[in-house]
Image 1 (spheres, rainbow, N blue to C red):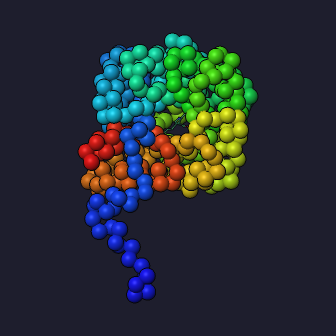
Image 2: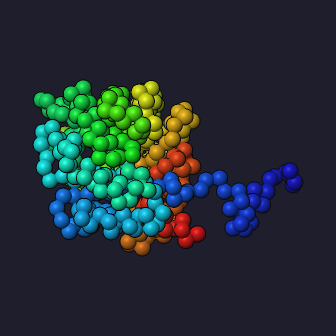
Amino acid sequence: MNNGFQRHRRLRRSESMRALVRETVLRKEDLIYPLFIVEGENVKQEVGSMPGVYHYSLDRLHEELEEIVGLGIQSIIVFGVPQHKDEKGSSAYADDGIVQKSITYVKENYPQLTVIADTCLCQYTDHGHCGVIHDGDVLNDESLALLAETAVSQAKAGADIIAPSNMMDGFVAAIRAGLDEAGYQDIPIMSYAVKYASSFYGPFRDAAHSSPQFGDRKTYQMDPSNRMEAIREAQSDYEEGADFLMVKPALAYLDIMRELKDRFPLPLVAYNVSGEYSMIKAAALNGWVDEQAIVMEKLTSMKRAGADLIITYFAKDAARYIGEN
Ligand code: PBG
């Protein structure tokens, strides 16, 4: 020490010096891009509340996939937006369901892409909840069988990873058992272990047509006020055999990410959700913020908080920025 203080600025004097000591770096391999696939033909339609995000029908999906592959993105997560909805969400586990057909199409034509299947019922049920309903309540154990069936149908279609987002208790154990029984013991489970009942999902529900038709999701998704509960949720999914843990949403829950990263030796995924995307897009479209700088800062903050991977609607933009540097 000189003059009684330390010179931290020594390591910030030039871009190359800053690069030399940079602790957190976002890589293209860290990015997972979400896709919304609708039934019908010749559809490419922008989601109203998510500028730059589109609904595609299967016959035009190659346009999006070419761009993704060209940018060097290696992983996608697929959401089906079905035409048919019923009480038990039967199109979620139909062999010819929109998500199953999409997975098979992608794996046949872009085998290098890792395809993650979101395993939930809410886009497929007419009531919009993530499980089976009885007397206005979402039944836990009765929903597990349908979720396991959905996961198996997705694995059968060719999914590389199963990502259950439904927040029923015991879903990892049930899905693991279902996959193993069907011969898919090598397919990993990326558990939405810690998923909060968040207002940041608004634009997604617009995109996936998955708003609950009555009530809300607070009896199964977590209370945003809770930290210890997140540890309990992650602990049980870890014990049930999850291969990845996820925290969702990301930005308002960076403390929870760090908490999980320090406690569980599994790859950690951040879901940078729709509302987090739309807020930045809206500000950027108004010229109020520097979009590129803000996107990179916030994605880097998730990695710094402990995320290994990030599901983000900014994946294409971020891959472009990384490519330019
Ligand atoms: C389905 C599901 C949701 C999201 C991903 N999977 C919505 C919800 O729980 O209502 C939200 C993703 C986003 O906001 O980007 N259960």
